[in-house]
Length: 282
Image 1 (cartoon, one colour):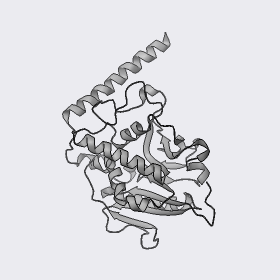
Image 2 (image 1 turned 60 degrees about the vertical axis):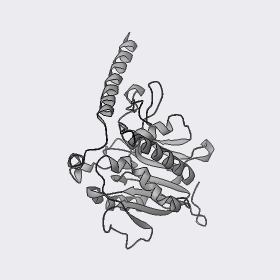
Image 3 (image 1 turned 30 degrees about the vertical axis):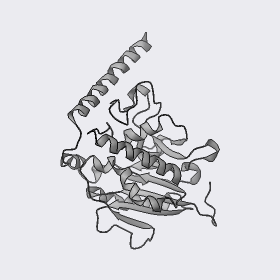
Image 4 (image 1 turned 90 degrees about the vertical axis):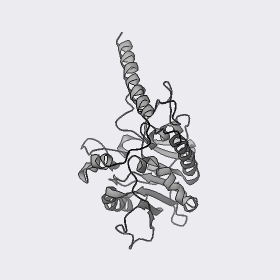
């Protein structure tokens, strides 16, 4: 639905930048303010431990929310719990979008390009992972049946990258509550999904068809003259030492059993893929 002048659609943009990730905010904001849904009313909810962020004094639609810097992988694993802090505020919006901190808009993004389409009964917006989806056997779903993110072999056709999550306010908050609850239940059992929040998102969608699937051009990892780039996921390594962030993290509740299961299932996926490819050659 196009944002008419007299009936501006209200968009909430969720953004997390704690610790060293704070340096990514400025370019994100500048690009999205200029290029993302420019005919709509946009509010930015920034979860950060910074005392101040660029442009917050100039734009009353930037809302800084204190969020302590958590050890890896909790900043990504617990993002849905962070969103629930402002559940009351988010209910007043027409659409909600979350973007990874390293996202940068590279071209004009219109309502027709990214909002869920009513004619297709869509209520959510996701993006196809640019590094997978060449074969369902390569998609790195969580195969640990102890996890609430578990997807058994034979299920799942598309692997979603959780760098962009969007949808109507109602659908987005329903997803947020469901996934947050599943993560909490797993943590009580000392289980953390293979790819953290992304694994839970893929599990949430495995039986659903009510989402708009954006192409790889919405999550490019590098610029190439022959490839369209709508949104670039900037290399974080250009801004800080990513490995040091993970290396300095405290030991998590990830149990030895869970590590064993994830390692086992990755090996099993390789065996199944090899047998599948061998069978095709015959």
